[in-house]
Image (cartoon, rainbow, N blue to C red; front, side, top):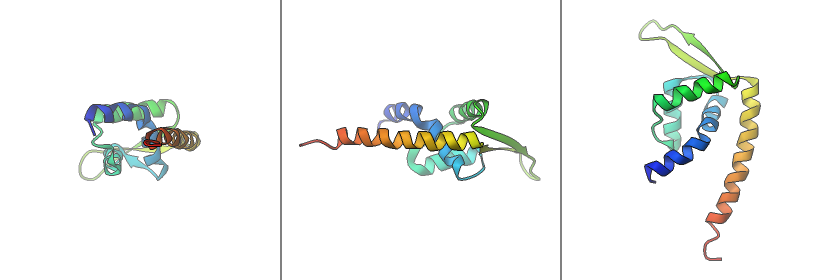
Amino acid sequence: MKAERRTQWLRGVLDLCILGVLYDGEYYGYAISQRLEQAGLGHIKGGTLYPLLARLEEMSLVTSRWTVRQQGPGRKYYVLTEQGRRVFEEQASDWTMFAEHVATLIYRRGE
C-alpha cells in the first residue's frame, strides 16, 4: 500500500482506532502506538498521536493520569470516559456500515 494513501485513510479514522484501543482498557501513549502498529496501521509518530490524544481529552472522550515509576520517566495513561465509550460504539457502528458500502463498490467487479 502506498504510504500517502494509507496516511490519507488514517487521517479520517485514527481517532476511532485510538478509541478502539482504549475501549479495551488503560494504556500509555507508546503502548497505544504499539497496538495500532500491531493492528496493521503502521507506525504512528508521537507528533501525530499525542495531539490527537490531547484533542480527545479536550472533547471529554478520554481522561489521563500520570504515574511515577521507580525506574525511568513517569507515564501518562489514557482511559475512555463513559462519553468516550458511547461515542466509540456509535462511530464504530457508523464506520462498519460505511466500510460495507464501500466494499460493495470495490468487490462488484465483473458483474
